[in-house]
Image 1 (spheres, helix red, strand yellow):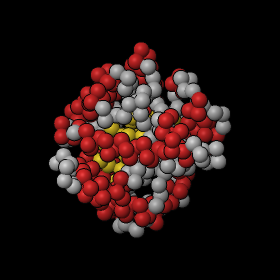
Image 2 (tube, rainbow, N blue to C red):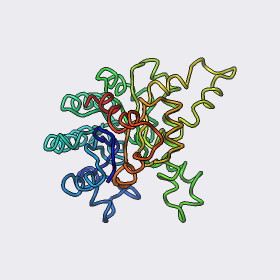
Image 3 (cartoon, rainbow, N blue to C red):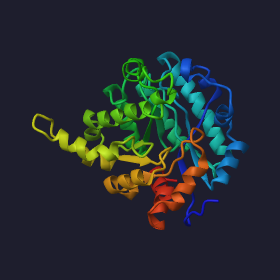
Length: 320
């Protein structure tokens, strides 16, 4: 059993699937029977048993990719509302073990902003968005009403990966996906897409417009903490628009440990971003719980810093 510091353990990127929403998924994103599907659909005994076995006190629940980001405008608003209402009932029935990030109907950005506000008033801790939204990167100005509302409500938006654009898959990965199907997903494709979005968000000017906006990236920042100095230095060369990429990234972004239990990677994040911008997550059930908490027991940080990662920073950022 994990020997944790004297603090609760809050895990921020822990997924489930809503039966109605999942029925809209097709192709490689469609549901497949098996243990993982069973875990995703369980919001009771099985989930709690696996949490208890790893000494995880609270999961912040979020829908798995692609969530509501591929829904058409004519159905997105009502379906997202039903998905969130069902999730709210789950959290309300067990508030000591569960919290939630909302799914938003990004096909109708103003309505998505309204849904964010509605769910925050219900107790949701922010929202999670997944990959491309009907083919568009989420830095596009049409999505800025969501970020305006998130800043006004003082809640974060968690940017979660989803499949890369089909043309990117064909150009970059097709030669290897038969033998290595995860290449387009967690092995690399997810990381490239989400890191690209993180860079685009900074370059878009959204943080100049909404300087208190908070963005969360999983997987220890999708490589960006490792690259932030180089990105910042290169963008300062003559001919660039004046800005400090590093200042914005390290001030407005937070990263979680989801699915990346590496001491060197964690220490890089601590050194670049500071301990207060790092939060604990597992990425359950795509990653099992025990390796995450057992890893945290041995990371080369003091108990005070471990406690910040395990729950202190989440309590502050999500007001838990």
